[in-house]
Amino acid sequence: MDSRCGVVPALPFSLHRARASDGRFIPVWWRRRAAENNEAVTARRIAELTDSRRAIVDAYEVERRRIERDLHDGAQQYLVAAAMKVGEAQLSTAVQGDAATRQLLADAATAIQGGLDALRRTIRGIHPQLLAQQGLTAALEEVAVSAANSVRVITPNPLPEMTEGVLAVGYFFACEAIGNAAKYAPGASVTVLLAADENLVVSVVDTGPGGARLLPGHGLVGMRERLAAVGGTLTVSSPEGGPTQVAASIPLLLARGESGVVVQ
Image (cartoon, rainbow, N blue to C red; front, side, top):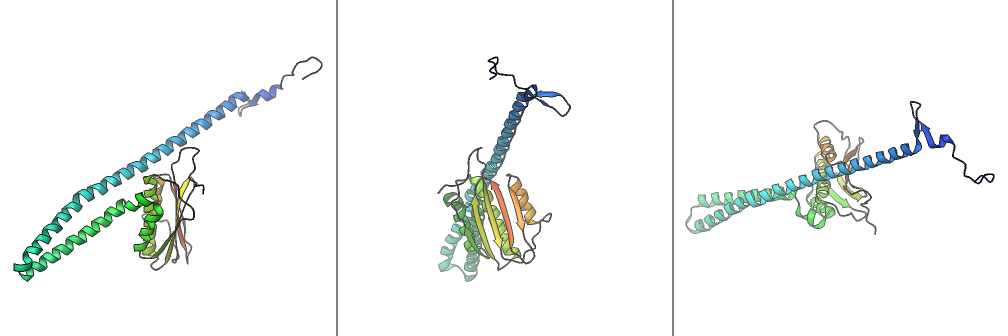
């Protein structure tokens, strides 16, 4: 305060205004409000993009469940009924049927059982029950048991709760990466590392010869495109001589301000 007159001196004129690129003066308050509006617009667009990606993932999961249900309630039931009929025919020919007929029925029973087993594997692949019931780590550990290579699954910290869609994206990425290792690095050891913050990170490393490349029409490019559909990214490190690491970063599709970190 100016002690000579008892009034607060006005701020310099230059502090109230800023000069635009074309030389015009713009009030500072206007620039501040414009910046706040831009921030609000950006936040709204991010939220809309998140909602859109969540809708894509959810729709994908709904369709996956529909296919699983159709196979389970349709084709599988027909095969079960056929197996029962063949079984009845085997019983009726066990006493009075000729050997050739019995052999034909036995072959038919074997073929039907093989079809049932293959169909059930397909159903589990479309929507593995263990994934929904016990989570990503348990589901991938089940995959590791039957994998062609030696596979271990490591989850250093607890994973947060995730939507079924995000779980499915992570699960099928890991399965495809494990399958690629079996194809291009047979006999190599494979490690699957799972972690999460705002993203689910699935890293698959094999001790094979390396040399994997992102080439059009090949598996890695397809993996990258499928991840991009839900806002995910793919990174590949595969020097000659190995090891090869493919890693997916998949948004958890959290609301703004939420975190996927589990506090222990």
